[in-house]
Image (tube, rainbow, N blue to C red; front, side, top):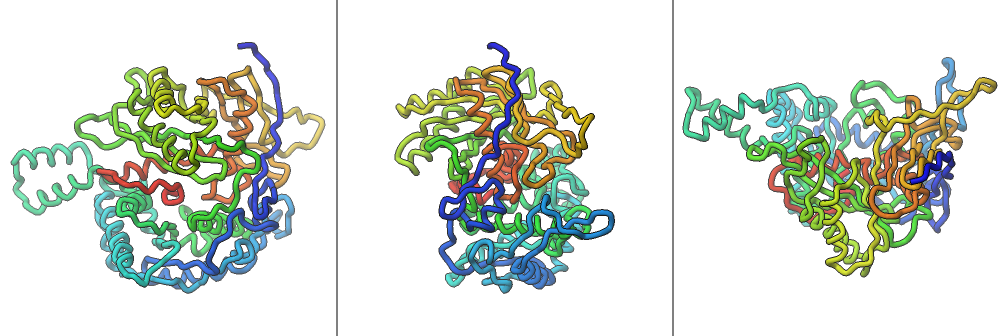
Length: 524
């Protein structure tokens, strides 16, 4: 492959809003033109569940979001309006043309003392499971009430719950030593303390469950086919404070939080706030997901999954099989032929069911190169359906994490004042198959950056297929603008890979996964 060594600039992709109007910043687009899809009702029917004392905090939070939040920034101890910063928030109803009542349609109060007792449990998985059961059982009970027809559930949790029921929280894990005791108990070697034996049996049932409240609750409700989306909100968020440090947000961050919460809510209502403005029709993008699962027989079992996104920005999740997908001599994960065909086949069938045809092009995004075996499986999925879909395998590496692919570009600013570095949208094309793309960098529209360090690009490689590198770069930059979970100008990763860890955590949060609920909005 002939070297090109060419530096190009890719203009910021535009998004489409109401009446097919275009804008590059989703906040500008919603403010000026309204959401791409209109909500059919005049008001949101929300249900809330959580400690009694958070009910009023929720109402105050919603009421605050009805009014504008002016984005201001402190400079040298003075608050001044700055044009080049996060846009101000106009108020929820003004932005989305629907009412969000501060009094919920349905509410379930939980006893704080009961929650405190659960949080005092020393085993992380045990307390998380108990807390999830407390919330989920109340939601399932409400579902039986024929008068309850909700658009969304807000799950209100205390900051203490957030800190004690998440990955890395303090408390005991189910260690190898405990697993050996459980194994001995199952072999009939009863201990001297019946209560301890009973606790071991309880822990055995939790070995495959997550210790993260958010992931386990989402997985539990998906298993139970609860079709009302849920949004978990920590009490510090309701008070416009940081969840980890509990610091009060500046006005700049308050506006950002308001935009993010509002857009995330609108997306979970089943309506797209915006879509890509110029992506080709009948083209879809598939991101591969691999996640380790607890398996006492095969220690290296891996759950496979895929996230498919179309031009309209909506996503679909496909959970594949569990297998030994880890390479023997490397940390990479690869599907075998059968499972590759099965996973891609689900995506193709879903596309055909919705559109009456198969996609013209399908780009598979992965973090490592595809081996010949799994690629043959992907091709078999296309050929067995007699589809004419053109497959392309695209490797995307974040060079912040892979130093072997790291590239640094610096501006020559010896003669000019320079506060910011490389622009977002710059790409260094190495040859017809490989390039570096700056999805992080200086953004002229905001006069700022979307990163907090010297920008590192994504390494892009067309590993399988004959796709043109320029088209691939344009598509990936566009896909960084589909993060409906955070209303930002542009993300650092395309949406096909941005949520892969989160999706994997939810898909493996509980054993015996069975659900046909595939819409992306249920998972984020």
